[in-house]
Image 1 (cartoon, rainbow, N blue to C red):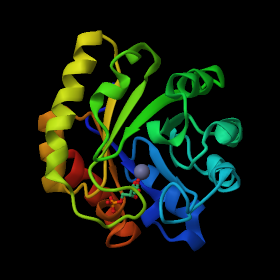
Image 2 (tube, rainbow, N blue to C red):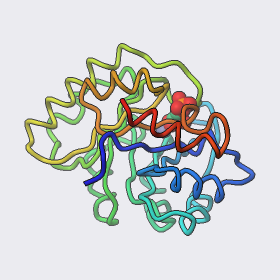
Image 3 (tube, helix red, strand yellow):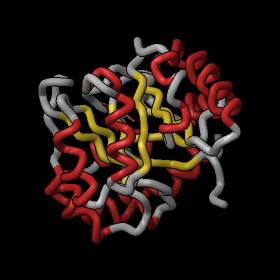
Length: 220
Ligand code: DX5
Ligand code: ZN
């Protein structure tokens, strides 16, 4: 059983010219998952990476690849990301017309299915389909860019979702993404988070700092 909270460094904050090396470095530094932010310049106002980059990264790590899709429409790309090596695939409810169908498709492909909550998205969106969910990801920023400040307004949502998860009796990870620092990490864990995404807070200071940065976040 790994120590909670799980830490998922976001490669969005890595050196893009040395992605494989960066992925290996955070794994060696104690990362539990590798978080990969996929953006299409349409669902969010930024463009990042596609399935080919996920595929290129796969042989560099043994930890699960936690792929956060900020693309719309999303359904037609699920298979490509799964084939590229995504172990967890998370989607925004706003990214397609049928969230339930999308989650079933992710599981059918053999990946864990995650739902991502924008700051304005209400927990009720998954109220009638908790059985289809393996991971819940709460955005504590508006998606699109790293380096933004944590929105404390999302802590109550984390608490609410914690209650919904506990009521199922199932193991569903509750992950927080955006502006996570050792300070805000503590608040997230107190609210019920079990996994933390961090870009800036892991990659700052370069490779020699990664292990200490991850320890500081986990110390939460
Ligand atoms: C933003 C991404 C985040 C981002 C977090 O849309 O989903 O994963 O990389 O970056 P930090 O930790 O710097 O806020
Ligand atoms: Zn993310």
